[in-house]
Image (cartoon, rainbow, N blue to C red; front, top):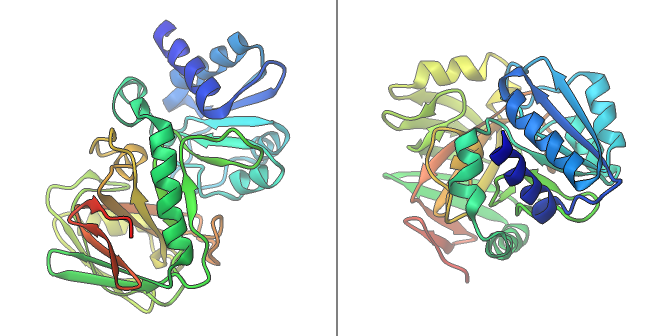
Length: 316
């Protein structure tokens, strides 16, 4: 516990600029209780007005927390969420940020991830690359992902790229910790083609073999592969859950492939595509679920300019 507290204190100072007397909230569940407690005690050591809220574990990524938790997130200056399932793409997180809170979400965080991998990155370097990729996405009109003979196209025209840099020191900034990604909400109804997900998938973890996902009119049409049934079970029966919700680019050179999406989607040289909810970052679909799949070493084009060549980022 002592090591967790010291690491937590460094994260809170370096990444969130937590100061003495600021209101600091930790939202956790019984599955991440020890990490939540370490962050709480770290906040006390800094001198913050720290609070610890433990809620019943959610059942899926993107499920809203109970209303008292959501209200507490709005009131706090700084909130950190070490939980089993992600609160990143929730209205609770969105509304807290709109009120000026600094929020870091840690879905699926483990003690190992606190000491190794993405958390150890040079976050100034991550911030610089993330911001540059975010600018490319914000200026772009169309994305094309090519991997294993499959190709997926979709529009991002008029959409704004979102940086998740790991540095959330200003009011209204938020993202994951550990972090390192630039992401955007594709325009609903525009995605067409096939996607080969060969890294990991939320609800499954590391993939034994790739998932081939066919997409038509912006929605998942069919899935083939060893894990197809498991993925569709996690996705559920809602038509909204089949929406192509997110495209993201990993920018953290220290991130490892672990089977936990919090770290996997940050890996430099990967991209990820998510299905379901995009209402919290520029889209119009509120599905109450958000499932990401990681693609390793693809070719990626924005407006026919190659920005990734077999996993190597190219900045035009």
